[in-house]
Length: 337
Image 1 (tube, rainbow, N blue to C red):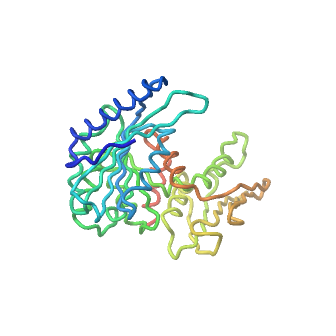
Image 2 (cartoon, rainbow, N blue to C red):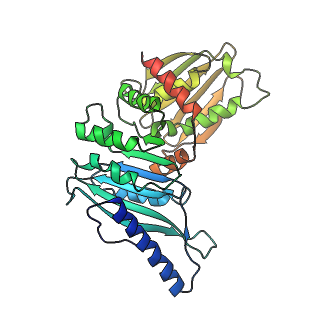
Image 3 (spheres, one colour):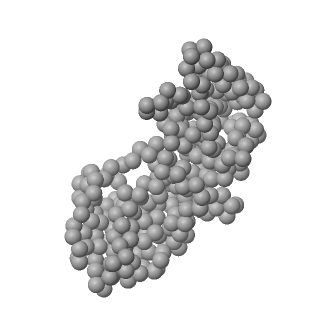
């Protein structure tokens, strides 16, 4: 359900459009004799994108995320095909939980901006955030997070980041020094930061963490002092640096990176060694990883690349400071020097 185009995209006009939308939804439900809609919102989720689909994929992802993380979703799409500097439309994303008659609805605002004017969107966004709730900024605008981003893109990125309590980016494909510098900068400004490349490590991290969660284990984590990570890229990618940072930070284990062929891009094998034990965790096929220890049994795990909705669902569940990620980030920065 959507409204007509709102131009210029001013906060008061957009909020008025949302008010009319909720009134229309309520009247429709009442007319049909159905239960009234339940309006749900736990955060403001702002997504900025420069993808050529004018925000379509970002909007679809937000609608899927709302089932577990209800939000006022705002998609800011930067497109050379935009007819005006800033224009918007509003809609409601509604669904019925299984076995329920009542609809749950969340607000979604779609704003489209010309490339040179998106830096001016921050005042509009400031007037649209839900009061007293977290503001999450997910930046899918690849042009803005590049080190050599043009001035307008840098200004737009920083202006929106200032509104947020947490900033999420995906550094896949970025040079690791640039990615780490940007995340460290935002963190120094008091922001919670997250990187979906870190989130992609969950299938690797969980099995390794489970090994050392066993209180009866004799060979403790601190005794492992040597770590080797194999990857497919010419230089260690940010994902390999995060893995090395996470595993080596507690005891400052010696880290070695090695290039290897494998099943798809990224990390292929993690080797963790102490005087008494060696642990190997390796991709053994396109959809399987194998974990074994010289003093334990072999285990196999299914392995697949999670989609962006799964990654964001996991990341939005981390409400506060992520100590594991921040420790890995600090150690990754050390490994680059």
